[in-house]
Image 1 (cartoon, helix red, strand yellow):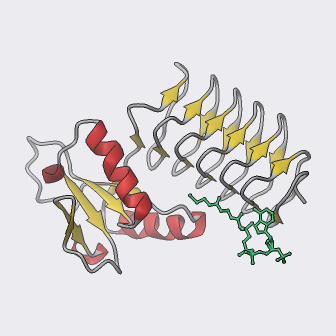
Image 2 (cartoon, rainbow, N blue to C red):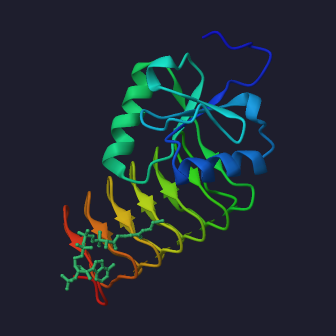
Length: 205
Ligand SMILES: CC(C)(COP(=O)(O)OP(=O)(O)OC[C@H]1O[C@@H](n2cnc3c(N)ncnc32)[C@H](O)[C@@H]1OP(=O)(O)O)[C@@H](O)C(=O)NCCC(=O)NCCS
């Protein structure tokens, strides 16, 4: 690592699209300054965004990272790429997100503005709770789950690995959503579902 050890390690936001800029905004709101941040993207042609440099993954040189990509499979792949380059995952929580006093946010997670995570909810590494989304008490989100803006996950729900809950969808209390299942925008999940489904509508099917 070449960064100056007297300063906090730079945070690399992997993905310089819309979600990447939202993560940048969360970090600015938390008091981070552009000099301590890096965007990482294979495709974006800009060399800087909001005064934050944009690097290719192969040009990164240590520090911390969070992946700002909603798709769980892509997020997994990019996280592994950063780990392989020796970067360490870190969590980003917008200062205006609300977390119950007993909630821990593990490395790689992203919690955006006005999200609410209730008591004894458990988030695994690299989960995302995007803005205005809510996670009910005692619910468990496994690795790389994505909860998109405004979605409502009730209490005692289990979302297995790589599940996505679309904008403004609801998952009713006590249900299990199987790994990699995608719940479409606005759907209401009224029963448990197995892995690898795409569910839409009310009730979701
Ligand atoms: C469910 C979803 C993944 C399906 O995507 P897709 O496979 O590309 O589906 P298509 O857009 O081809 O639509 C297929 C059919 O499903 C319907 N459909 C798509 N999404 C739907 C939804 N959320 N609720 C109800 N019906 C839906 C379409 O109208 C279409 O119906 P038709 O065959 O009668 O015309 C997607 O529409 C969705 O809801 N994604 C979540 C988006 C979101 O939350 N974005 C937030 C970004 S911040």
